[in-house]
Length: 341
Image 1 (cartoon, one colour):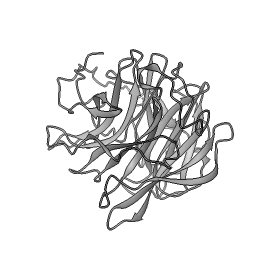
Image 2 (cartoon, one colour):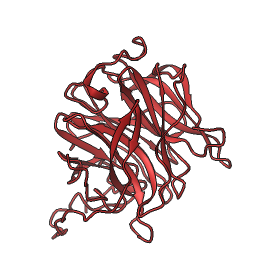
Image 3 (cartoon, rainbow, N blue to C red):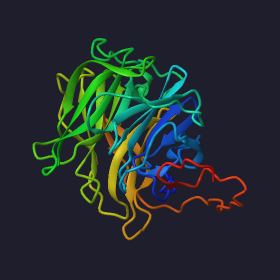
């Protein structure tokens, strides 16, 4: 895969990207806040030329966005594929909290939400399947199955999220519980995995777990979503992180430009064994807000490093045309629409 991506790969209001791979197909979802339909889902086979295939929340029966303030509502979804089914977790801010929806195909129909216990935001799922099979998104570096902490997590699924400890200081922590995919619920004890790369770390959030060779990698954002936004990682031999390996690994430090505020990343492995990261970024002076960018990921001694996020000549995009005989899925409206357009 060519390392020149034509960033941003999803321009204009596409924050908090999450990606998974199923065979040779990639699927991506972003936050949509108070806009409806909610949680747009995209597909491609090259991580660059994305096509909008639908939205996970497109029926009034699924979710009520009434009363959600500006930039509240649907925060930071994560999409994963396991055992022939897509699982998408998200948080409804100013609402009941975390939920999961499922579908056999990314275009839907997606299920009614199942609400999950626990406070916080930025939820994620990790299926410790223990191989590099067709799903392929969280396999092992180099294609070698790892021991996975003496089998503690192998064959199980885990839910992680961030929660606030001290909002004024920006102190948060990452917590985890086991997830039962068939029942779509959490079970077992809670584990606190992480509270930042240093004692004064601000806003550790956006957690994602991966099994890399014989240990587990926790990827998080830090610094808040403005100029200090960054990506860090930590490794542990056990999925619950009880014995931590070397502390924080800087993956993507705060960016000075031409793209700033980079962070909130998710990793994916290509069929060729290479690694990429989708992440949000901002073009200074642009009114388009947080957009989705793509970075190359390299490894040294188990430490991931992101290539700098730059602005390339974007591939040509077809002009949007709509005669409004049938409302295109590319349009959104504020909060839940209950009557046909």
